[in-house]
Image (cartoon, rainbow, N blue to C red; front, side):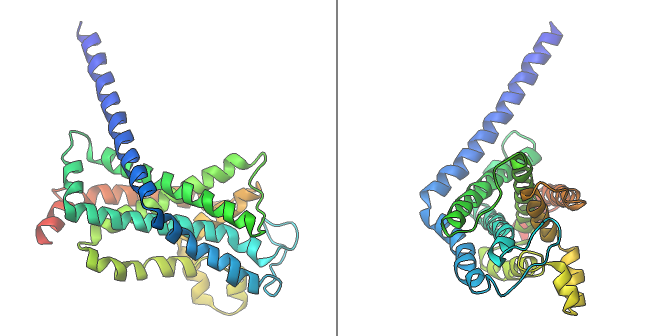
Length: 281
């Protein structure tokens, strides 16, 4: 019967898509677990900030009682969500580097010629990046606990924390995908990252609250931080840790993730972006 044949073809297509998703995610996981230095390098930066910088300012830099906090907190507790965001940010950018490398070595061209929608292939890469980001963030949280920084991770709001971390990882992974469209060669990657990673991280609420920026008279930094999507990823995670409503932050993070992913798919379309970049490179 035509209906039964159509159902069989649909089922086969779904199985094929899921197999491709698992194959790409598994490839990224296996590659990551063979590169021990990658995990170490991902954790060195936030651990140093927590163990050295935050320790030095632990009781000097006071954080007032403002949402989501209901009491005074130490500086290391304040910047912990920002350092988790740092882990997500650097892994998202690392995935961008991997995409550029795969494109130069030809692996990405092979993936894009697979009999699957191009958006699905890129989504599989994004899913792998998000999973690796969350695993690295979990490793950092464990180290932070050993250093004495306690975070309210467990409780009724644990699903909120996981959702916020996943949303931030998706947004930064999608941004990495979009950047990989623009970076044509590995040699240009470091310079591009210096204009992305550091401004996104330092012009945000990862290290200091927005009200302190405005209070200090740094009006332009305050406005830039408000326009920075990384600020909302950090704030969503910060509010989720304490089970409070993050306002517009989830919508901004999810909207940015969707926009970056759509633009990345457009960029990797041979008729528009990726093919033209490859020919010029």
